[in-house]
Every structure is written in C-alpha cells, then in structure tokens.
Image (tube, rainbow, N blue to C red):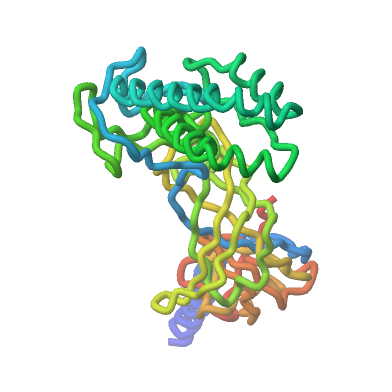
Length: 370
C-alpha cells in the first residue's frame, strides 16, 4: 500500500512539472504573438518655419484688349483679300471691311471743287485789299489736290483778313468738306491693333446699316482673369502683386500673373470682391478656365501636414515613448489637401501616416518616414 502511495505521488509530481512547463511555453508563445501585433507608426520630426499662405481661386480668361466692330455708315459690304471670318488675324491698320462708297466719293469731290472755286474767286480781291495774305492763299490753291486729303487753311494775319475769309463762307465750306472726308474714311474699317477676329456677323454682299454690329475683335496673348475673393482677406492683397496661374488639368505648367485691379464694391449675395489678374502667354486662349494661387500672408513658426492626419478636427497623433499621444493644435489655414498648424514643438515625432483604429495610449513601433 505504501509503495502505491509513493508511486502515485511521483506521478503527480512529474505531471505537475510537465503541466507547469507547458503553461510557461504557452505564455511565451502568447507574449510573442502579442509582440508581433504591435503596429508600426511612421513619423517625421517637426521643424517649424515661416510658411507663406495662399488661396486658390478659379476664373475665366478674357482678352484685355477687345472691341466690338460697329458700322457708322450704310452700304454694301465688298470682298477683300482676306475673308472676314472668325479666326482671321489682322495687322494694325489693315482693312477688315470695305463698304461701297462710290456715291460718297463723288459727293466729296464735288464739295472739294466748290471749296477750290470759292478760294480762287476771292484771290483778286485779296491781291488788292490784303496783299500780305494773298501769296499764302495763292500757294494754297496752287498745291490744292482734289484727290488728296484737305490741307489746313492758311493762318490769317489780321482780324480784317479773318472777317473777310469768314464773310466769303470759306471756313464753313472747308469744315463741311472736311466732315465728308472724315466720314468717307469710315467706309473702310481698319484693324485698330494687331489681333484676331473672334466673331463675324456679316459677309460680302450684305447691306450694312449704321449702328449694326459687325464682329468682335481681340488682341491675343494678353488676357485678364477675374476671380472672386472673400471680403475678409481682401485687405491683404495689393495691386501689382505676383500671382501663380495654371490650368486645373496641368498644375505643373505655371504662368506668371499680376493683380491689376481690385473692385471697390462687395457683392452682397456672396460677400466677395472681384480681383482682376493680368496674364500674358501665347499658350492661353480666351474663355479658358484657370486657377490662380494668390499669396495672402505668411504664418510664423508653423508646420504643414496632410489634412487626413487630423483627429477630431484639431488634434494630431504624436509619438512619446513608443506610445500614441493626441496633441491639440491650432489650425491657421486649410488648403485643398493640407493644413497649416501651430502648437507643435520642434523635434516632436509627428505620426506621418494614418494608423487604422489608432487611439490615445496605443503602443506602437515607431519608424522614421525618411
């Protein structure tokens, strides 16, 4: 009986030793598994600096120099060497539209002839009464060319001479003739500057009437962009300030712009102010939508982070002793993808990549993003 008791005791001791060993081994496995489940937290060391703050606004390009072409006379539109069509370029002074003017030319020539005869008829009297003035008027008639523009009448040397010329109706006839001559010039519409026709409303053979809109003409390469800016920041903008302009589809291609005008009136419905930006480039076309990055101020001792890292709107995760800690920050400015914040000390280990299900006090394995 005693031997049986001893044998049972030995078996129990051996079993206890084996059981304890298994418990210790299972604990090591558990601790190892727990160690393997600690997430990696990528971080960056914070270095505060002065960060320029800008806003991005969209606007449409309009030609800085543009005119609507109107007719001031009546007649049939004639064909020219260049088609009056949208897209046609013209040099300054080049004829864009010609209107029939045969009857008007005949009228002008008749009026010039009347003026010429009128001055000629007074020359004998001037020779007798105003010998000093005679030669000036005789030379004027000698150089008179009915097919050229009227030259200025000779200056009078005395009140008597002036009254004599006035009494002979020479001044009235001259200015009536000059008026017809000026009107004749309106039958040929010439390009006021180097540019391109963007819209055409008439064709050769069309009857053109005074006041009729004929087309639209712009100077390419020189444009103006209008953007609407909040009234709260308009005081930070200045005329002449440089602005970066780009197309939304290609933000790498930057055009240099400059604020040219700031409206003095606030839009009541949107509480915004119109700001106009000059942009010059042969790559741009009227009607294009662009984005303008407008600098408004510089933030002192700040840091820029991805907006996705914000927790509860104004907190960020930082790493302290391999533990996540929520740090409250002050939002200075929000960009499309980033925010500029203050309240982080230099050297702070800021979590640089979001961690799923992260929480305050969570144990992590820190690793530098660099």
